Structure formats: C-alpha cells, structure tokens
Amino acid sequence: MMTTPDTSSDGHALPGSRLRRVTHYIQQNLDKDLSLAELAAVVCMSPYHFARLFKDSTGVPPHRFVVRQRIARARGVLATPELSIAQVARLVGFRTPSHFTTVFRRLLGITPGAYRTAALQADQSGRDGG
Image (cartoon, rainbow, N blue to C red; front, side, top):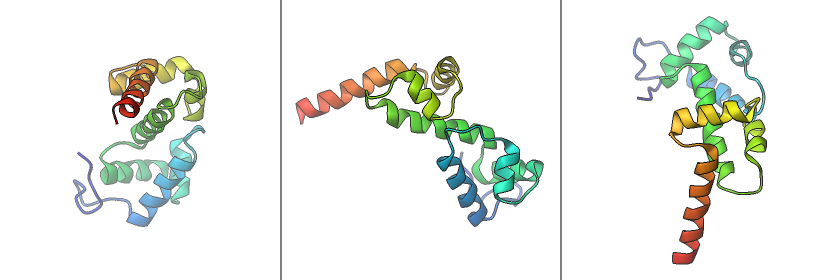
C-alpha cells in the first residue's frame, strides 16, 4: 500500500516538496548509480534519516523505489523494438543485462524479451483490429 505524507504509519514523512524533489531527481538520473547518500544529499538530510522518512512517505525503501522506477521505464522502452535488451538495461541503470533480466523477472514474472514480444504483438493486433 502506498502511503502519503498524511497517512504515514508513525506521523513522520518527508515534506511534499522534498519528496517531489528527490523523486524528480531519481527520474532524471535512472541511468546512473544512485546511492542512498546521494539521494539524501538532494534533500539535505542524513542517509539514515532520509531512508526512514522516504519509506514512511512512499511505503517502500529508497532502493526498492529506484528499482521499481527503472523497471517501469524499461517497460515503456521495451514496447518498441529499436533498442536491444542490453541497451535497455544500460538505459535504465542496470550494469549488466543478466541483472536486469533477473530483477525484471522477479518483479513482473516474465523476462524482458518475453515482455517485449507480448507488447509488440498486442500493439500489432491493436492496429490490425482497430
């Protein structure tokens, strides 16, 4: 369940402006290594305090949030055939295609290649049937 600053479990959360600032920073830098210290510095906090408030605000720890954002971005890119799986992996911040595949399969239950095939087939059938 996603919590908001108003519904966090213990009443502690990142202020909305700081949460927006750090999530925007994450979106703009998905292709880079994003350390906890770097994310905390974006909102001028200690890493420990930031991690605790971020989890209270979003319902997930910062690392898990970043990984989910990377996979969400990858899903969009995989829906087009222009880039290889390895290129997509690098584009969304994974160091190796195998790690990308492992994480993608763990979160979505399907490999990136199978996801791409299904997405392209759905797109093709949508154009043929519509």
